[in-house]
Image (cartoon, rainbow, N blue to C red; front, top):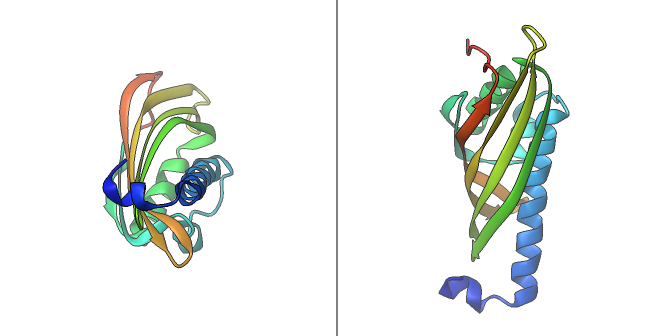
Length: 151
């Protein structure tokens, strides 16, 4: 831990770590719940000026993130996203979350299975509404099956 997080009481760090874990797990689960991926959805997970870098592209801002996720998730009939091995470091009102991600997809085009595994690299900011992602990047390490063609 760095000097700032070491100054926090252990209960504060534990509470922040739990809140960040819950936020990221809710985010992954929301992808599988097939929601609307609109501005309200994006505001519950991302800061206004957040960035994402995923196989579906690099985007900046909540509206762009919502549109990008809506497009990407439209390529699949069903999905299951699994996050694990979170390494979370809290530094006052900022934090990082590094983790592994396994994503299973059933393609909308032909029902074929596409699976990918990779690492997720995230930065978070404490806001009045709680922790939000200011950067969410997914680096694919391997894949099995044919990925969908992006529009």
